[in-house]
Image (cartoon, rainbow, N blue to C red; front, side, top):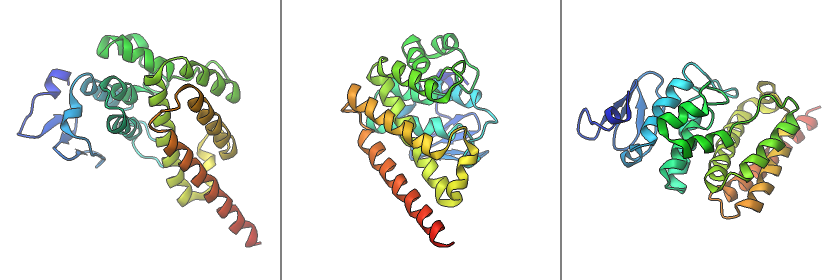
Length: 235
């Protein structure tokens, strides 16, 4: 469905997007039941087109930690950016931040659909799969994001925050066993999160997600310490 079609209301206060109905208070997907509370004013261009692209790019994909539809993650990131940044280009980039890495879209296709500025940010947010070493790949990615401007660092921080919140929710249910879903240990993930925070403090100290990212990371470390302490005391 095109951006123009998305902008045309089928009923007062409602629009159809794929299998979803959008009302004044929230998105409610008729297929999966996922809801996204976002005001209708967020649905102008380029966000509407970005949403349609994200649904197509992540069709059939699920999240590693909890098996939820993958598209719920970029939607959550876009929602956070809408609330804190109020920049439609950042919101659209947040919606599309994984479509090159995980959705097989190219930067050229993104530029054709929503413009080169958004495609440039999405490129910066894409990890290089040809860098096989985990630590080196994360470092290379941080360096590119750091030099890509505040729109990129805002999306990067929102992505890390959304991922961390999802990880904490999965950890509350699965404990240390949640690590089996990922390519790195929880210690490695937290170590790189610490480096992400240092980078953001250096290049974007007013980042709207920085404080929440630090507090969530501290809470997760405390939760892990408490869980492991209980486990050890049980033996």
